[in-house]
Picture 1 (cartoon, rainbow, N blue to C red):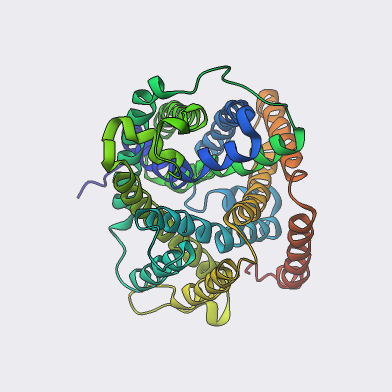
Picture 2 (cartoon, rainbow, N blue to C red):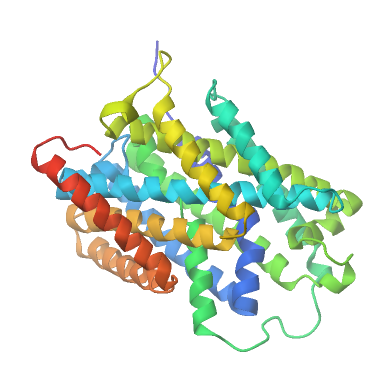
Length: 411
């Protein structure tokens, strides 16, 4: 039987889904609330950076194809020690980011019935329990559902962005004073919009004519992601809330010219399904990564190859995070900032590997530029997030160093 291989169009679709993910819902209003009207410039900078980021990882996946992606490149460049560190950063990001995804869905569900005696945290916890049950069973359909929902959300939001133009506010499109601190924090949160490009390597063994297919898919995906993100961010930023019912969420206002009174149910339904599928994909991938790299009980799997022990560990971590959310010890913005800090560190491992592995001055210059940009973004994290990240990294290095020296090469 002939093995099926991915072409440029299908590969582009598989990449675009995770890259847009819940970020298309979560980021536009959040970044505007932080950076004000200068948020659109943060978007432009991050989308340009994203193109270079995708280009480097596309080249890396062409030259060093492997299902492990960034971890494989890090091992080829620096050995198992840095590979394990890259895996650790991804797992830490997956420990915090998915809770923010479900909380976003919870906020939209609450907006459907604001007088109900349930908070957004309660709805988020209910979605978490649903995900827990689903992940214990067959989830082979999740990837296709995520792609369909991401595509539907992209079409709906792009259409809503265009139809909302007549409802833009009057006066200058960029107003207020520029604050470097707020702008930097907005840029840090926007790194969430780049998460997913490093997944190119995970598909590198399943494409035909690797160089041509991956190159075309990355160009197509970059254009699609950039247009959809910028259109949605601009509409969310410039739409005039005075023309709509007070208290409405920004993305619901943006869709009102297109869907009328059904705008809120439409965006709530899209957000819920999209966030659920994103959570399932991230946690499912992280649990398999933990199981494949661990020894002892965390490596245990069921008869049908489900990493049940690793899933239990992630569920416990997420339950603690939801407890902190419920008692307002932490908020969604902070969760995204923590996850982004670890995602940036994971990307830095991949960029350092690309600098060492890819030949040619141009690739090395771009790698150095991106490393400097991402390192600068980390400086806009709050001091306690940086301290937490350094502490966790130090603990991992101390814990893992002895195992690597003995040749185990596992977490």
